[in-house]
Length: 110
Image (cartoon, rainbow, N blue to C red; front, side, top):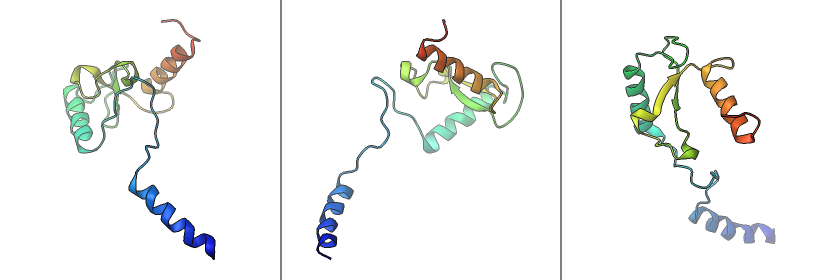
């Protein structure tokens, strides 16, 4: 019973100073979320007429992709750094992500 009394004050100090859970690579840009991102996503969809930049597929559920990745210094909200790519396991966004991962691992050449 004595241990429960001592753990209470420790938990209070943890809640007072939030700890950042997600760690990013050095130099990475902060990711944008919430209503600002949703408005930007809608603007990109309208600008690109709901068309995949790679294959031309027209749908309303494409992913918004950063042309220059955020970890390489790409601007997270710049319209000229955003494009639509079709989503799904065998679609354009997955292929681009796999290619970028291969480049980072040194398995592929640019």
